[in-house]
Image 1: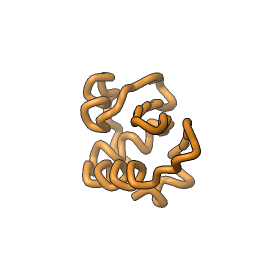
Image 2: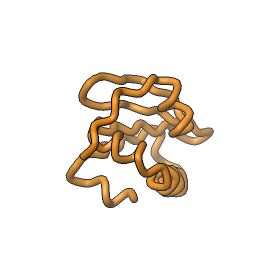
Image 3: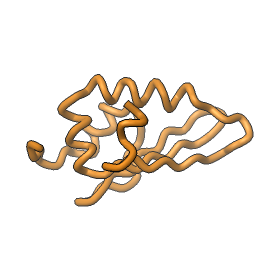
Image 4: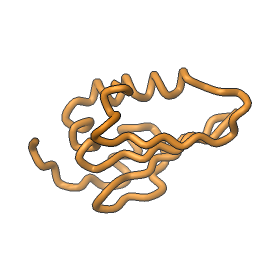
Length: 89
């Protein structure tokens, strides 16, 4: 896999249309605040590099996560890593 240098927080926020809460060498945590809930997504950096190279994957993930709303839940935390990232694409 091609190694992509670490992106700036602002670039990630623009790509994912969310607020970057944590960004370090292992993972990035992105918060989306909706009128009904808060969604927190943790993405490992190797998967983040894959998503940056294939930005259509980002659109699919965003569309899927925003569509799957649960009205009773106020906060949801999702981890996207090497083992489960294909589910979201």
